[in-house]
Length: 141
Image (cartoon, rainbow, N blue to C red; front, top):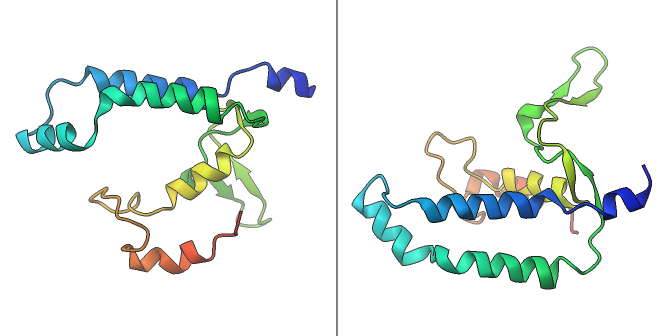
């Protein structure tokens, strides 16, 4: 497809982010009083829509190339054929227009730590010692 096709479509990133913040703003009751207090103390959700609009209008307009992206680059969606060694992506339901760097950024986010742990806790990369060697091997971008 010609480059103009992709440049005329808004990246999915913004639709998804605004959808998530709309959902978060609808939450009135949390699972516990402790969760409610933490959300009130740390999240400041009412500021997020303005911050997203600022990012979209001021930062994203700096000529970020928009292309077709996979948009769901998880380890579970990458298959390796046992005999040929060929790699194939599966599950294209989230595929669509997005910034060219989105898939690689999502990959690094998914491997920042915590996703494969039962607790689903997201520690800082530095405190997640077993993964620090993996993180250190990431290329400099």
